[in-house]
Amino acid sequence: MNKHETVQKMYEIAKERYAAVGVDTDQTLEKLQNISLSIHCWQADDVTGFEKLENLGGGGIQATGNYPGKARNIDELRMDIEKVVTLVAGKHRLSLHEIYGDFKGKAVDRNEVEPEHFASWMQWAKEKGLKLDFNSTSFGHPKSGDLTLASPDKNIRDFWIDHTKRCRLIAEEMGKFQNDPCIMNLWIHDGSKDLTVNRYRYRQILEQSLDDIFTIDYKNMRDCIEAKLFGIALESYTVGSYDFYLGYGAKKQKIVTLDTGHFHLTESIADKIPSLLLFTPEIMLHVSRPIRWDSDHVTILNDDVAELAKEVVRANALSKVHIGLDYFDASINRIGAYVIGIKATQKAFLQALLEPVVKLREYEAAGQYFERLALLEEAKGLPWNAVWDYFCAKNNIAIGEAYIAEIQQYEREVTSKRK
Ligand code: RNT
Ligand code: ZN
Image (cartoon, rainbow, N blue to C red; front, side):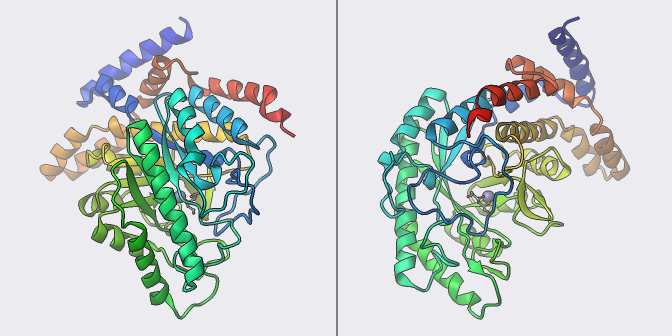
């Protein structure tokens, strides 16, 4: 039997096994095929971007590691993303930050950015069958400081309001061009390293800035707002906390972004899904992996990600939840980092889609809690990996660990030559 025949056979067995618990694997595969991930562009170059301005880095975030071969320019970044998408199944999106504009060697300040700086991205994305998402960038700039949109200094604040408005217009143009809404994420690092006696004031200013930014209603873009627990060098206070954005999102009907690294480590992000679905229009996810803090390690198939996917699927909310990735590990092969995280997220959703939820809910409705727990436990051992391998085979991508060699080859031929 060759590898593909084995995969086929294993799938047939898995299909029967799942049918016994009331799950249709063929239907599951169709659903998985339609899940698009919003792939973050910034794993390719450690959140550097292509600005010809002084880049001050950080702003509450930090990529660590110096693995060779990072993308140094727009062509290399595109090449890397093209490679990534050939190694994974499905149709996906690319999430760009404003600092990744095609500035053609010119110094374009953040309050000068225009849709034209993203024209070549739109064209390229169209050719590659990718849709674009967008992010304003308020970190890594001489005017970033500790406070941007929440700054009491009108000059600083207005600069960032202007920037963010421009970004919304760019997102609108992207959405129009691709005939599919561009999701624009707004995350700012604003906070305080040490104790502040102005918690209320900064949040009030941020609310006003957001109201100003969101005055224009666009048709082809959607806004989402991302909270955080704390940033590096801003440990004592975060203006845009989860309470703040949840309140703002519920009141103003904006999408709240849940970054899985932005909460206390014992907090369940999965449990937030059903609540947000009730009070905000949609949800944006930044699937990441915090290690002790918001360390942005590569997403893997762990219980947190598996539970997150399950809550989305159990709530029948795949059409309302945008699944983005957000990590940046500079210590390993960056293409490999992408592929591991994409596959892990897809596997989590596959497992969620394969859950025998009808039977589980029957048990629950009947008060049969032993039976519910037993089936939940048994479901963990059902042959989901046979379904996964078959999904990869159907999509003509490498099965199992075979993609490691493909990434090694790309490293030999391409990334290792970048000095
Ligand atoms: C930072 C946020 C934010 C960034 C990107 C680069 O903590 O998670 O989403 O990672 O905007
Ligand atoms: Zn994030």
